[in-house]
Length: 473
Image 1 (cartoon, rainbow, N blue to C red):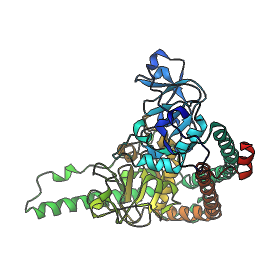
Image 2: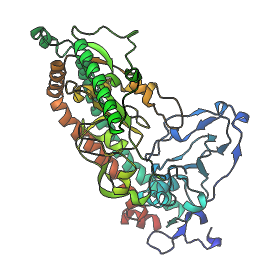
Image 3: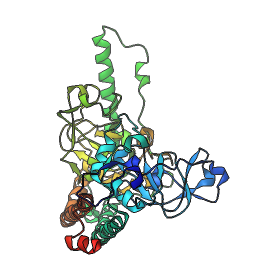
Image 4: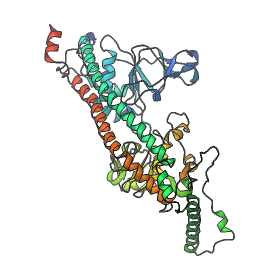
């Protein structure tokens, strides 16, 4: 490569070169039907940010043209580059055309290239190249990114040091994740006991005179219909018209639950649906492209699926905001709205701690009566997350539709027992929540150290001076 004018001196030189002057994409297309024995890697098979292969599929099941890769190649996901799906493969196979396949060569080690493409400065560069709902980059675009290329021998030592440090970090993260998993199992057992009525069994024995849930539900349904009729009359009056004959027949009763195969409930409880006891609607984000700069940076909180995932029951923090223009193409939801994700992370829940907007990948739910506890409903949906996720079709990005949530069966306790359940759960999980927050924060800190290591590596500061001297000698 030195014949091409490429400066391969050690770090510290001014010989940065664009990636495309060092490597070139393989560009070998293949018909999956001709290679049914080969494994297939889709974008979903590679975990975002972590360079981890989660699973593989079968090429025999794929119909569209794929990219052929070989051991030692680096796969770079060109769709939504901010996800940074990059992976060095150790076997031959086929990959989605959304991957750019980059082979290593005698001038650059494949793992060195993988880590370079995973570093924060490159991700930031690639993420700003294109806009739109589904931004894609081309090799010629990312190929402009400048890298300083040390000799191959030093690349190998850098990779070895990165992997040594990553191994220590990963061991720490794995230990914390085991703690996290134990707490998640404990939390799941408490929630299951709560929504099955086991936590409040003694309370029910001491409060036999409360209004049964079936009577509460019928009262709510009557009040709901009455409100609809009042709203319709107000509309007719505003238009100076009298209501037509049989206008009340236009009312649509909300979906009732299908109780087939549902378990028996505690005495005083009944089955209902989210749509019987509340109002469901998707968030709004009408403008295209969604990431248009003029929509962001204003005073209105804009909640995204990640904010819901990281919330602990209540959403109290957010990373993005809408301007007046952003609000105009969206909707401002009130405090205490239950947020349910329906795309990417299915059926994760949290409750708004302030007024906020959110996109159509999130559904908002509000109770139609003060006799329904949003906290209780949120607890119940958490116990159903795995079942709801299983209902999502296996597409490029899993999602569930609004109709699915309309028909979700909810075990409804009497009003006072809903409150008692929430209090009992909070009491049992108070210590666990503190440990979980501490564990999650520690995992995030350790995960961030990966990028700190890569930054040092590609600034030439990872190997000690003694190591460099010994290598030069």
